[in-house]
Amino acid sequence: MPKKMIGLYPGSFDPVTNGHLDIAKRAYDICDEMHIAVVANPSKKALFPVEERVELLKKTTKHLPKVVISSFNGLLVDYAKEINANIIFRGLRAVSDFEFEFQMALINRSLHPKIEVVFLVPNEKFIFLSSSSIKEVAKLGGNVRGFVPAVVEKALRRVF
Ligand code: PNS
Image 1 (cartoon, protein in one colour):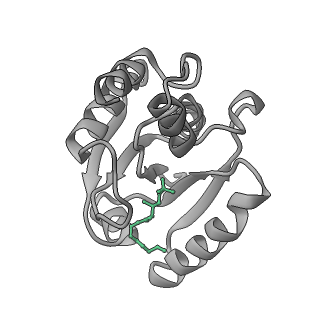
Image 2 (cartoon, rainbow, N blue to C red):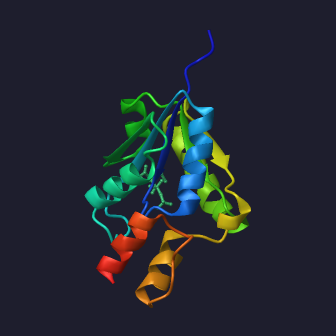
Image 3 (cartoon, rainbow, N blue to C red):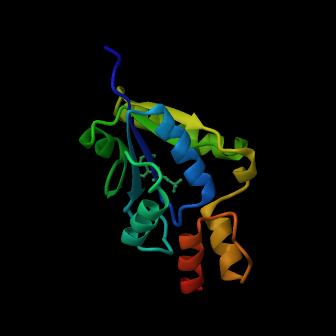
């Protein structure tokens, strides 16, 4: 019997963008079970608290019924083991993402040899999108419509 594919798409999601959602849908279509997990470790200073990032992901993935949204502390591979995930998905937008992602994939594989890391490429209309540029545009009063879902746009307007 073919192995059940349990996917994990981790990230900061601070906040979730349409680029993240594009990757999430592609991963969802490949997997039997799909998890999206927000990192709770404070390695980067986040704009939104982890609970709100989880809530925004829940609201924006309602159209993907078998997705489970959660948060995790500690090592990604330990969380993958906890939920029995066998694939970690990451989005690759450009060559500039590659070095960091390649290093992270190899570290994760040396910590957990049974996990596969799969890179997915978003629709080209989202290739330039990042949560940090969205936050900067929103902070400076720019329009982020089309880059993030409406609930995220509203949350950004509330913060700035
Ligand atoms: O959206 P991001 O900020 O690029 O996501 C990075 C993330 C959360 C995937 C990465 O920082 C992570 O896995 N953090 C958990 C800690 C960990 O496992 N570190 C070892 C891998 S280098």
